[in-house]
Amino acid sequence: MKISVIGAGPAGLSLAWFLKGTRHEVTVYEGLNDVGLKPCAWGLISGIENLIPISKEAIISEIKGFRIYLDDKLVHDIRTSNKLGYIINKPVFLKSLAEKIEVKFNTKVVEKNGQYFTTEGEKITDDYIIYANGHYSLPKDTTIPAIQYITDYQIDKEIVEFYFYSDLLGYAWVFPDEKGSKIGIGGWADVSFLKERVKKILKGKVLTFHGARVSDYGVLEERLNGKYIGEALGTVFPLTGEGIRPSILSAKILADSILNGKKFEKEFKKSKLYWAIQMQAKVVHGVKKGYMSLKGLSRIMTKSDPNLVLKVAIGDFDLTDAIKLFGRMII
Ligand SMILES: Cc1cc2nc3c(=O)[nH]c(=O)nc-3n(C[C@H](O)[C@H](O)[C@H](O)COP(=O)(O)OP(=O)(O)OC[C@H]3O[C@@H](n4cnc5c(N)ncnc54)[C@H](O)[C@@H]3O)c2cc1C
Image (cartoon, rainbow, N blue to C red; front, side):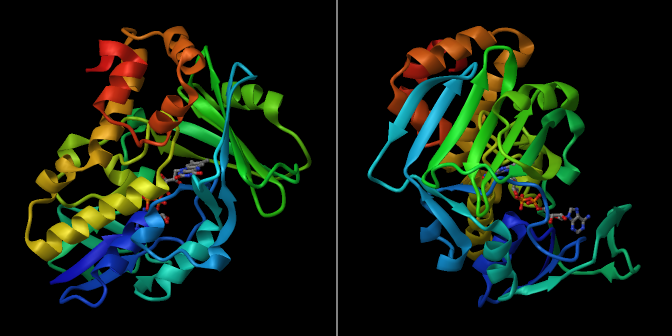
């Protein structure tokens, strides 16, 4: 089968990589002239390296600790001897995938009346067209703004810091970077509020400032038809904004469904990924609709076992953990 994939982010590139060497011929179309240009803090939770190669050159540091702050006070300082994840050089990682598959850069794809065209006017006639174009195709009310400063502020390369607030449905972060750190914030607020709020944790000389929208809605059920993967499907953890690993996992599930002739929707719904994202999404929706309070959520973050908070934050939790943390509110 000839397959076209719209978007060369983690989702689109990994789908093509997973299907490489099979009977399927995959072309990825990317509107920009390179990979990895979308703003991102480059944090990646462990596990994905068992599915897709992450070269040594793409690893900036290994993460062995999480600091969690609430209203700028440190509430959990979690250190482990295990590797929790990585800070990767996302463009280097994506480039190493792109080199091994067919990617057409500077080629935006547009849909007109159910037909697909490149910006040059070429009609795409492939049998199967898959959206992996990230937040760009999401309705605005399923995303929040996220902004980020790249600074020369030096922090421990093995630690990531997460900030939560009792008056903001969102999160801020200080992640180590090659030259210093990436300091950013995303939330259900306008950009001016976010800029003001992040000032408190902003340190060092600002080298770059940028931003993008990020999904906080969870998986869009109506897109579970095998035509969407990655953030275009809503595979971002709503409580933390983690989207790289979920995008790759969704691509893996679609690749396996295609190869085994199975229904993507059924396979995806069986996955822990789907369940964990939708659980976090219930919390976010609960706060937005007013049946869960932000203050309650803050209390949960502060008073609970740090390892449980960490498990839920990284999406590695089960029903028992969810009940322990959130009570029966989200079940
Ligand atoms: C500020 C910020 C920080 C973040 N930090 C992290 C983090 O540290 N860790 C983490 O896991 N996640 C993070 N995320 C989320 C993460 O970046 C995304 O969820 C992830 O990249 C989604 O991957 P994707 O492949 O689905 O989409 P994308 O990475 O968005 O890739 C989509 C691609 O499609 C292309 N495209 C769009 N429309 C078209 C079109 N019509 N034709 C052709 N090409 C098109 C785009 O140019 C883009 O290259 C962050 C997000 C933001 C905004």
